Amino acid sequence: MTNRIMLCAEAGENAVGIRTVSARMKSPHRFYIGYDEFDRLRRDGRAISSDIHSFVTLRLDQARDRIVFLFTWLARHGLDRMEGTEQTVTLRWSEFEGFLQNCRQPDGSRTFRGLSLDTGKGRPRLVFAGNRQNLKAAVGSRRIRHKLGKALDRNFNWPDAEEIRLYNDFTPYSFFFREYRNGRPGLCGGLIFHNQEDMDKAYYGLHT
Image (cartoon, rainbow, N blue to C red; front, top):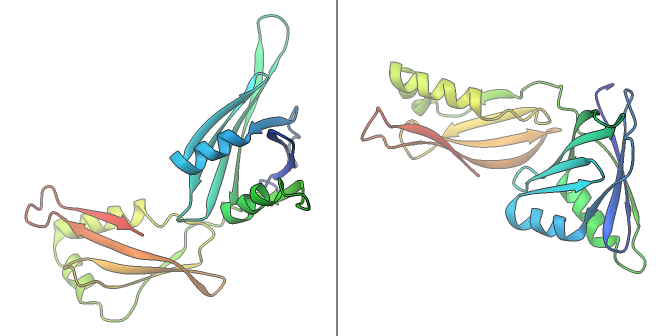
């Protein structure tokens, strides 16, 4: 738990002021992010903002309900030296967006506190459930088995999920998946094997 960071936000007229607190450090100052930057984040999935010497990159993954703050806190020491610290804070987007929507209402809360999601729990279990015909066909081919292994390693790196269940998809060698968190179903989609007519270019793609 010592790696988790508390993000404290306070809404102003034109911007949201943010500070971070962890067992290791407190942010050197309050970082102000304009509401227009959050509008850009919703539109583009990414935004960059600066304040004093520091800056933050915002990343949005609505499918995973995540907003990521990548802070670089910089401070000037002397005339020719800057020192800084990087922090990454991951929050549930639905909770933070609720604050953004409510804080500008006359009776809305103007403060928010959120503890960064614990990203140290490791990967979820991968379970092939039901009929395993597509799995047997995939592992029966050395080339496809290698591509499937790389796809499973590259995807599903979701530390807050407990289990990913994969089922046969109607596309050969492909799978339908469903995520489970706290025993409840979450995100679902497909791990689809594309370009099968040319095995050199064939690949697995994740679709949600």
